[in-house]
Length: 444
Image (cartoon, rainbow, N blue to C red):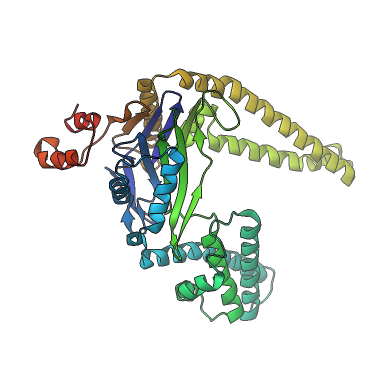
């Protein structure tokens, strides 16, 4: 995991990222504090890029992809930052060196395995309930019917509640099945002690298909954040994408709602904003005045109390209430809870969010950088003094992007001694870096 922050106002953008990277899983994890997650996307234009989550894309490190794109882009100019973002996404999609059959197989299998295990766990609960009630162990046909029913419910839930990212006309089910049927069958056979019917297998293939084309992302997906200016823009903006991988020659990517700075606040623009990425809890607490876990716990507890309140009243007064009375009390409880939430939100807005945004709105670029670093460091400190693994930590890289100065490094770690690598700087100079980068490499 990681912690990253983007802070934008009309002066510029400050980006900050920690250096922790977690390797391994399943209780065998190791954390290194040397990862690079913040880069310049161009040597000639005021654009930065951060990554969080998966460090690789289809088996290729994101750092390599970013620097390869940077070499391709050179000094090409684009009017809007969104055009640079679209160009980068197209580069990732179209570069055949990033199309990796083994990586695609792993993506499909891992996503399907997680969903199939969820189905089988539910089936196991049904079997245990059946036995606990004095019934016999369900036969194969019954178990298959449960698997089929749960699978169809899973698919319908995806269709009804998830966004379809990959066009079904571009990737028809039959094309996906032809390519990945054996991969999915390997997962099924690894869990099942008997062969499923062709009908049930077909449903499971369909489940894998919808997992891949919908906006369901695995823990190995990557968040990509691009911030800065286009050639014709005088205010900065920030775009975020969730990227999974190449599925049947198409990139699975989800663009999030962008943050665009303008001269005045409107439906499309704001004059200042703070955006956390990955581990957001401490920045959320700082901004909203309450820990997000505590807020969710309070709301959930109040919901449960109000749901059982009619029954508690009935027990207290020892008089049976009609269903209409109970429903009226529940409606009243929901209205009271809504009023409570509105008042809390108003306090958060007036006492926490608005004063903070008003300050960010007028911060000079030096203070933007200091604030971004402090927010990442706050998350790192919380992990360091808690029992949890220190998944945020190490040196914090900080960069400020302005229209006039471009991307300027405030803090940047090296993995080598600059005094011993003069040839590196000579090669870098030939590719056209600016004076700010020269000063950076010389340790200034």
